[in-house]
Image 1 (tube, rainbow, N blue to C red):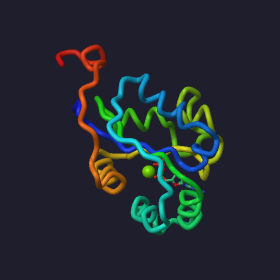
Image 2: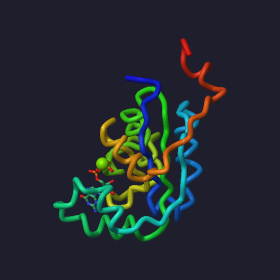
Image 3: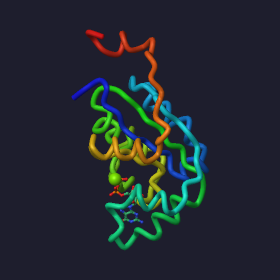
Image 4: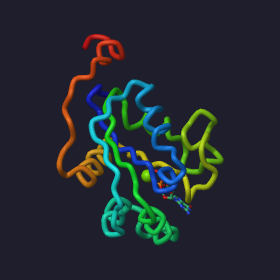
Length: 153
Ligand code: GDP
Ligand code: MG
């Protein structure tokens, strides 16, 4: 586990349309993660098929691609201790009805097919997703908070 660990977090089109971008960013900021990349993009179906390639055989795949291409998404990269697993914990479970209150999905949505946000599931997939969504690279900066969020920095 490293304080350099990075995860790809994305606000899906329903999260953008519902005006939840700021609230989702706030959850990661307040927890102590560092934002190192951020952009709003209208993704193409081809790009989204790459992002969700592992799910291509699932019956909901065509609907998932249509949903994800239906409007802009906000992609971001957050860095910090245990970013992938804790990032998923901040998002909650895939089915929002099973997601505890206090998680993003448990607080803001109801349907699996409209669950407002994405988070990488492994460190390896996070690095692949960061390359796919940010081929231009991410920012490198020292946060003034780091010495207060972590010990021994
Ligand atoms: P995640 O990692 O929690 O986002 O879940 P998965 O990687 O398993 O699935 C990716 C996304 O596909 C989910 O976030 C949902 O938006 C969608 N999805 C997954 N399972 C279903 C399903 O059974 N029905 C529908 N409509 N969408 C699903
Ligand atoms: Mg997933």
